[in-house]
Length: 113
Length: 114
Image 1 (cartoon, chains in turn orange, green):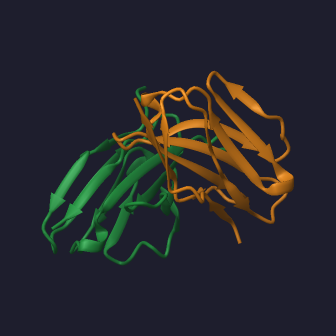
Image 2 (image 1 turned 180 degrees about the horizontal axis):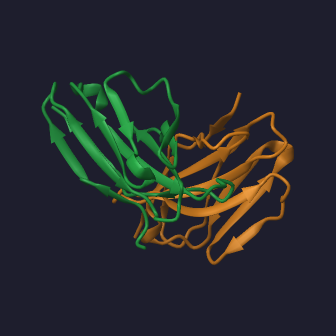
């Protein structure tokens, strides 16, 4: 079975704090793709990153960084020096053996000024 | 090209009425998807088109739901005899032939059935 688990329902931090959003996935396929999306209050899903199963190299993009560990089936997302504009719901998703996304239930991040 | 466009953004309807949503994908994308997102959940797959052919429908898509993509361009999703349980955000996405790089999502249509 394929599954994505985001155990953190909601996280609140004060601006400038670092925050890590957890994502654990399940799949039996050896080739798969992991994604993070941001969903602001306006509703659209904004693509943040894609990672394929053969590339465990961590990635940094500005204040965002991602830690992919196949050994623990995790693909965690860290925001450094959070800002109010980072407030949104963040979804982790998996494409594995098909064209369909399997989304987690999302983590609502609230960054307080 | 400004991305995937969905109309209307919001729809409030009375229970039992029919509603239709429209999605205009990115023009060069031949794959189009519909997802449904209920409150507090991640989006769930509803159906998928490759060009004008509807290749898969989820079991979530009851007989009251129908989707079309005439001429492989825009798509419509119709819900007949709406029920309160249909209240959700309906998201459309498109992608080129390979999905390995992810989809581009529209802003969604939020349906409220009263």
